[in-house]
Image (tube, rainbow, N blue to C red; front, side):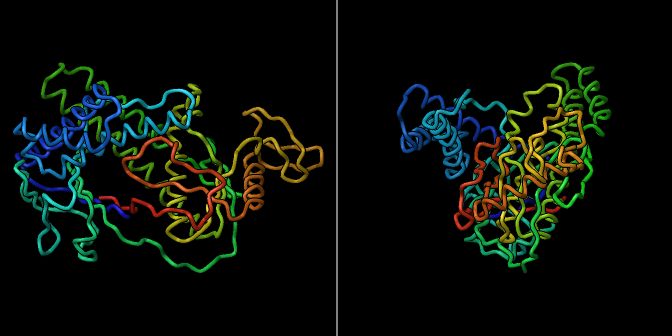
Length: 403
């Protein structure tokens, strides 16, 4: 499955209709969640029946396409199922109890409620929300795919406008010639990563670079009266700056991951738990700015696409262990050079990258996989060493060019 994204061009009244559809989907989801809270033990079928009752009771719910309402029900049930699954697995800490949504930004249609023009450059939404015909602006060509391959259509609101996403069922694997090379990657804050060949990639620090601009926009927001039109415009300007930084970080991770995967047959990386690392308040901003999580997602996605092996290695003691003799040399974070009693001296991150590659080669055939979904969050779906390569699942998202 791949996701192709286009920017939607329409009139102001159409944008208002999209907002109404999004709010209706949020209403259905929250109502189904409340129904589950009041009637513990109900399943997805009961939630579908409750949705039918909502459509009969509220006219604005009935105006939304029935499949879009069903998709909202499925969103509610997925949060419920995830909560039960976390409880069964006895995950430490919070189990992710389902919460009500206050600011949804998307509504999802299935195979009905929309139609494409003959040129595939326009889409018309046919329900009673009066969204109408929208122009699609983007570099992708939908003519390469049959209409029955489009399984979902999602309308998404972002700071810089509205977007239409198409979920298409297709194979995205590409046959490539083996390179005969393997590589280990050690990510860091000083350098984005250091590989087992001694090469480094600088850390762009997009958030740090744009922090001055963010503070300026944030001050503009704080000076406006709450609820005024000027404050809404200032908030939108602030959101655009955040959106630009997130896109820069995502494109940087995507470009590096693609180059690394295409140049090697096996790529080993650290199986980091970013959620735990950011609990260090002294390093949380720098860790989030580095974008290690996005880099890992794209590594595993391109690994599946190009048929390469990606291995998630336990990072424990990779910086302390000598890659030459195996002796443990304790170091603080400030010690950037590895000096061993065997006479082996090299950069700390270079030594860690060699250890990561060595551990990966000792478990050849065991890989890490990750399902790439633009709506997924957290790293709980990551599978470390122990999953066979032939069992990897297809990605749910395709890389997209900037609009």
